[in-house]
Length: 126
Image (cartoon, rainbow, N blue to C red):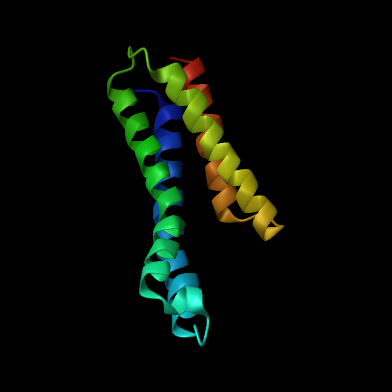
């Protein structure tokens, strides 16, 4: 079992669940409660689209982590280099976007950077 791949999967899952739960609790629900006359938030369909877009990135991180976990059980798979390139790039791009948006270090961009580096390292050591 490749420890790098396991670390990547755990960091990716932690990022996904933390992002969805904490953002729902501390960003989305308070924003909806204080919607006032904001037409985008007040409209039901627009609000559902906003929530879906917010959680879509977490879903992508879960899919990458699930594929990584599968690859820990199937280390001879030929798709590992492709997953490392695409998954690592997505994790790292997400970490950079998080850093840019918050303008400071945050547990999210640290975990996503760990996920990206560990995924690439796991592919290189397999």
